[in-house]
Image 1 (spheres, rainbow, N blue to C red):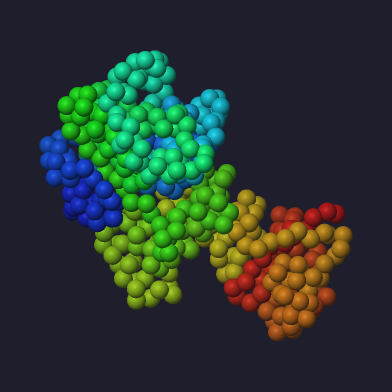
Image 2: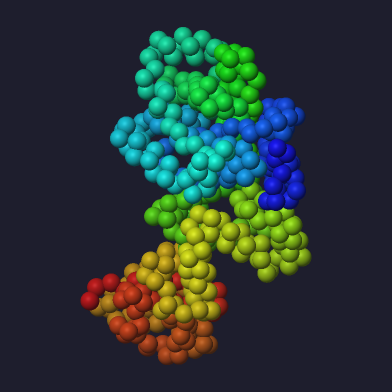
Length: 433
């Protein structure tokens, strides 16, 4: 096995990961390369059920597992039914402990969510889905302290950034959260014993936990294992990636609509779109390099952003949702038919632009609507917009300032989409009878 597939552009899997900017930290890459070249390597990455959905940070880890699987290696996707009951220490405050039934439900949801990203067939490198509660729940406190706890040094655990920051705070840190590192390390030991797992991948913010796991296996089994930390993807200004004004970008369409998901990616900054293409898509090296060139030479065309949004939204939500999102994007700004959008897609699109609710009983005019939506700063400005031909309702030009909506104008019986000029849009929901 040489770890080379067509998707890696003819590169070894480690070289492909490096090209994609996905290796921020590692234990011994030369030793790992030798193991990868010798035969099938079993690797794992874990996610804790701290919410009912994964977000795009988790997606990066699942795609990293998938890249190794495509290169012939065997991935294990771990959902932490045990570690999720405790929670990795946050730098700022104690985590709220969720009920066992809630955590168990989230374990099932996350397991179902990650399945489409890996091949769980009976192939020699078919993926496994595991829950660390299976080997942790029956472990007594005495056995855990004797068999695991004795191999950890408190000084090293205190050096972890999240722990040290909490120790310096007034709140401090509980013993439960402090012990999280032992639980995660024990996962690596169990997966090594059960499945011969020799590589763990995770975010670089988990590097202390990753190396604690390799250290535990070395102390207990005398075997040197591997760890790779992927970088924390950021925005161009260095702030956290994957957050919007409305919150986290989730994979669950009920928490982040496919339209909002698509819009998140299409709004990527020019300076970062190449990074996102490399990390989150299966586009070839040549395709990505060409898109990076187009971004540099013709940034106004935003070809890379469109390719990014299509690729990641297709990966998570499918081609049909991409088509709906693109149709909604065109229609909102006068390049498509708003009436052709289904109610769910229209509502999701309106949620991403300024919107407000108006009472039908007040029979609002176009001037009222422009001012109420914020598209015009005053009634005088609204009148000028109408007089200059810049006012639109559902992409139809409104030519008189006393225009009022009829029932036939309401999209799905409730919405109007206003536009001032080409680029400024807002939604209005007409409520009441």
